[in-house]
Length: 116
Image 1 (cartoon, rainbow, N blue to C red):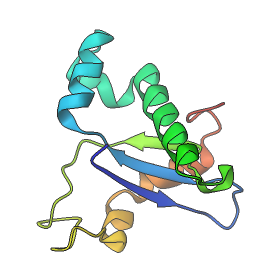
Image 2 (image 1 turned 120 degrees about the vertical axis):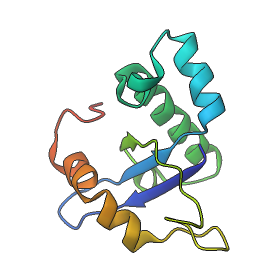
Image 3 (image 1 turned 60 degrees about the horizontal axis):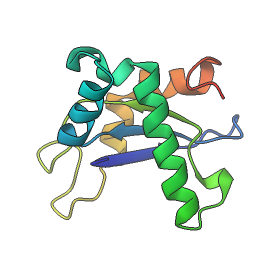
Image 4 (image 1 turned 30 degrees about the vertical axis):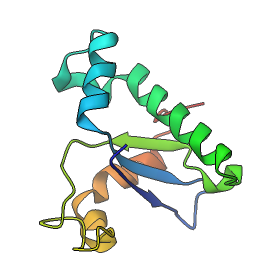
């Protein structure tokens, strides 16, 4: 993953995340599963593999289960200091939230999004 932005909601008991996958690694993963690059970020198998990797990394780094997102959305926009990152490579959360408001809300309301 190149970048991740995690969101919480006072009405939900779980976290969601927007994930910008590493283009090279994700492209190879898509090729392995014979998924066209244009469809890769919405392919349920690939989304689940990224989510599984996210969970494993979180647990390996001593995060509690409640601190690990349970639903994700893969996004293809490059996050850089020109748009969603500061010069110090920190997230510009307000811009990310504004840009992806619909996607984040959908993760909190769609019961089938990354259903476990």
